[in-house]
Image (spheres, rainbow, N blue to C red):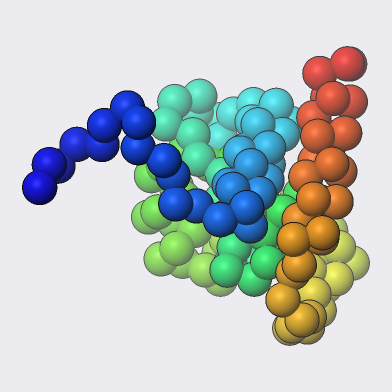
Length: 135
């Protein structure tokens, strides 16, 4: 058995998995364009998109208010190990009303996101990216 994929290897990702990846990639581009630097330290290297509310919650995974650009150290060693400080940071960043709306959305568990929902999310994110690039 070979450890490397041949160039004729076909991905076994489902259309749903491909759309989720595409939406994740779009959010990453949008947040990098929007924030440009680590929003905690101002650093410009090793930047990562950090989710305040877990990205496992698909109703918030692509919500642009739920994501912020952090350098890798702040993402892992601050946002994940000091969630209360991260929460305070996000409340200051968003304002109390938007933060409370995200809290409510995080508690609300809608039915699973359908393929058609993912297509619409992708279209919306592409429009946001186009608007950013058109500025």
